[in-house]
Length: 154
Image 1: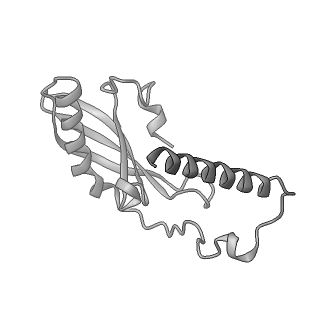
Image 2: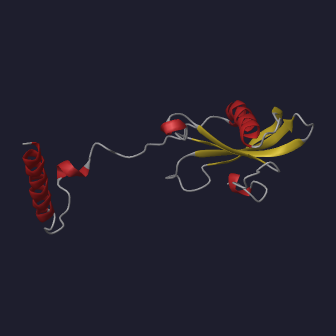
Image 3: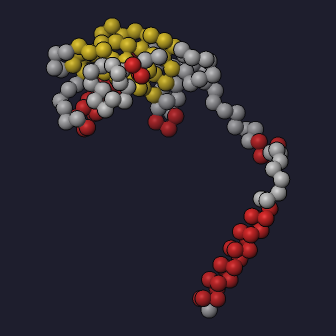
């Protein structure tokens, strides 16, 4: 009984697959109004990107996490200075709004290093909130933004 039931379901699945396959062999047509997804209007960016100073705690926290977890280093950012905006939406206005900033980061080893970062509208986790991408010059150990963090600038 069990073998005949599974055989019947296998035949049914094969027939169903052939039927849908035959239906898809037809000529390609434009989408009808219900298939156009008219309710999905696309991203609407309004340029609501936070100021440069708002990203500094995030950068300090993420820097410490990266250094301690991946590089087994005790380096921490202890403060920032000379933080300024370098560009806002440097490309055409259709792109995701970004605010590019630069500044100096004081590390607990006594060195001052340049830090370049951008704040991205809807760039946070799962598109919620502002996201931050950053690079500390001389400490881009995995070369994600090298040379000298140039890829982190506009």
